[in-house]
Length: 370
Ligand code: MRU
Image 1: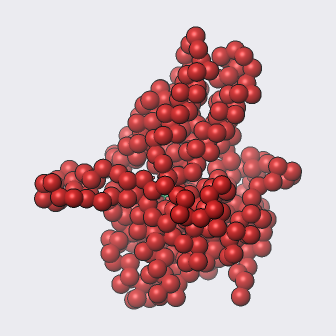
Image 2 (image 1 turned 180 degrees about the vertical axis):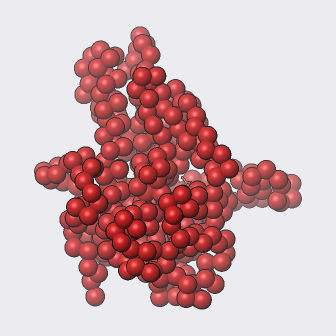
């Protein structure tokens, strides 16, 4: 399991893997302020919806690491700064909501507040890890040994707390006696697919083949792909899903070729307050990401550029959403609502974290409707 960050309790700082340098360098940064964490999130040193929620949560912890006269104000300023670092992934505002709540409920000394914040950040991270294990096993229920899945962007360990979302089934398949292969989309413009997915699958010994984004249609037409599986940055209550730019195109291609298109995401990525994809804010990033991908100029100076980082795949193109609560099928308004965690639910997510994967059983039925 590869993780994006490790909190050092003695030094009270975050060791963070700089994902912008992968795969050439595995360099760990020491992050000791909320401002440095916000910069790391903005610059994609840490990226992927669950990972940025976790990183931001630890970023809030950092705001209380040194004695301050007005420590409560510092915590709130940190949460606001971190929340504004990127707009699309819902894990960021929801993690900040949890951290603000933890701060509000903490006792009045700074030491107690610090402990409460650290415990909440650890809970957010632990819940995501447990969700990743469940996602993996639910996802495997949809596939047979020998199948090939096409995936986009990077949705593995370092985009989460270690198990991944769309990559989770591929990463645990072998432990379950299954052989799954992957086609990996390069993912323009920042190449999360080739730089990070291909790197992580190689480390895990998964049989993976890299293609550029524009090859996907051809590869599907040649019959090389059995299904498409992607992650999500924000899923609206009706199943419309924001994910890395290019995902919507893949969903259309999958439909044209009669292939199932799956989204795999923890329920923390569902935005219950946004009824449809129309309400999702799409991040626009700097034109230099398109004109100067990795250094050299690849476009004429002054060219106009449009660089949306995400797109929204309508729910009707999605065969199923794989969640930690089970595989949910259309109509998503009802099935997602049924999967939504209920406060009265018996087992805590943390309590399943150390169980072997084969002991993690689905909550909802995994069979597809006719
Ligand atoms: O811009 P990025 O690299 O943060 O985009 C990440 C994605 O789009 C992932 O597919 C998404 O966060 C799902 S991840 C675990």
